[in-house]
Image 1 (cartoon, helix red, strand yellow):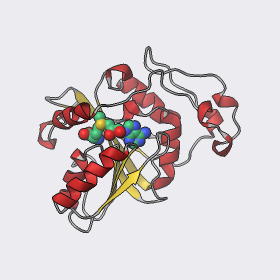
Image 2 (cartoon, rainbow, N blue to C red):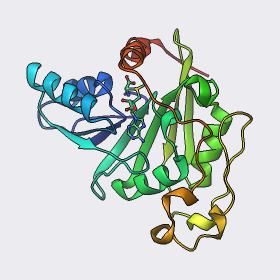
Image 3 (tube, rainbow, N blue to C red):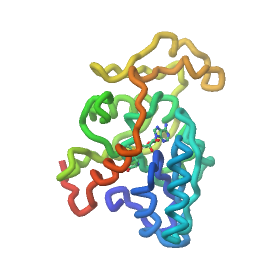
Image 4 (cartoon, rainbow, N blue to C red):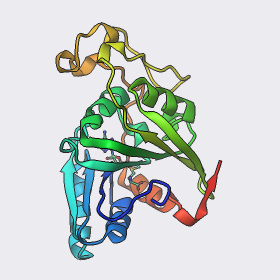
Length: 227
Ligand SMILES: C[S@@+](CC[C@H](N)C(=O)[O-])C[C@H]1O[C@@H](n2cnc3c(N)ncnc32)[C@H](O)[C@@H]1O
C-alpha cells in the first residue's frame, strides 16, 4: 500500500477482493471516511465479506458484484486499483482492462500482485502481464519482488487514451492463453460480442480453500524488496 501511494481521501478498489484480505487492511489504513470498492464475481465471497465488515465494524466499503469481463465500477471513481492474486483468473484481460479504464481517474494507478507462474498454475508471467497491459495502453511504473512469498507487485499508470479494440494485438505466451482469430476485425467495443475478445486457454476457478490459502500467502509490506 505504501508503494502504491495509498493515502487517506483516495478512493481505492480491491478488485477480486475474495474474502477481503486487502479490503480490511485498506479500510483500517484509510479510516472511516474512506471509499473502498470491493469487487468480486462470486456472490458467496461478497456475502461473507459483508458479514466480516459488519462483524468487525468496518465502514466505508462498497461491495460490488463484478462481471468476469467488467469490474462494473462507477466512472471516474478510483484512484488506486489493487488486483491481488486474481489477474490470472480474468478470462479476458483485454476486455476487462478496457472496461476498467473509465472507472480510473486521471493519474490513477493499477497495482497487480501475482506470482511468476504460468496462468494454469495460478500465476502470471511478468512478460505476459506487461504485454497484456501494454496492449490496452497501461504503462508500467514499477515492478517489485515480494519476499518471502514467491510473487511480485507490478504498478501501471492508467492509459491516457484507449486503443480501438480491433487494434489490440493479443499477446502470446507459451501455455498461457489462447488467441482466437477474429478479434481485430471487430469495429468497436460496443459491437464486440463477448466471444470475439481473446480469452485464456483455461477457465480458472478458485476453491474457497485456495482463497484462504492465498490470503495467508500475501506478505506484509515490511517484507517488500526492490527488484
Ligand atoms: C485467489 S483469490 C484472491 C483474493 C484476494 N484478492 C487475496 O489476495 O486474498 C481470487 C479472487 O478473484 C475473484 N475473481 C476472479 N475473476 C474475477 C473477475 N473477473 N473480476 C473480479 N473478481 C474476480 C475470485 O472470485 C476470487 O475471489
